[in-house]
Amino acid sequence: MLVHVADVLDANELAHCRQRLAHAGWKDGKSTAGYQSAQVKHNGQLAEDDALAIELGELILAALARNTTFFAAALPRTIYPPLFNRYSGGEHFGLHVDNAIRYDRRQQPALPIRTDLSATLFFADPEEYEGGELVIEDSYGTHSVKLPAGDLVLYPGSSLHKVTPVVRGARIASFFWLQSLVRSDEQRRQLFELDVAIQALTARVPGAPELVSLTGIYHNLLRAWADV
Ligand code: NI
Image (cartoon, rainbow, N blue to C red; front, top):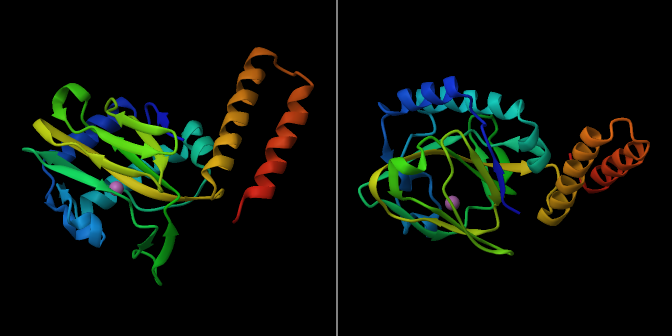
């Protein structure tokens, strides 16, 4: 399941991030890639211990914490500290799969995080660059994603994906992984659809008696499927 989460950042946060990232110290992105993906990765990235990456990463985590769509779709258990990348001048990232486990080395001892979901948060608007599509192959087919600045896409960590060459302008984004409370993409999708239906029914028929039953079913499924 791919989920587009709109307006993760408000206008002030977006302007702040864009202004700070315009002067960031970009390094070769191969440093965080696994063996296979390093062969096909051509971009710039902020070091994980870069002070700006840490500061803006915390801003993003705070924005995610207040976003109910993100929470409902991801059911996050542990979020890897957000990273930042930049593609320009033909840079691209060939087809690859993300490492299954990432280690958050800011924790002592390092905390293993299973990458159930991958996320990309866009800082540049689509018209600011040419190319740079995030192309995702999952069990539902191939999807090409290029979102407005401030928006985020969530996609299964198990998918093959690539970023096509950026031939004009610059594509700046944050990316991160998360371990979900619900490991199965299929179960998480069903919970999300049930949640969305309950929210819609709540808005259309406030106080409908069926809402109690449906909400109970949601929580009983979550209790059955979650690992905490
Ligand atoms: Ni990747």
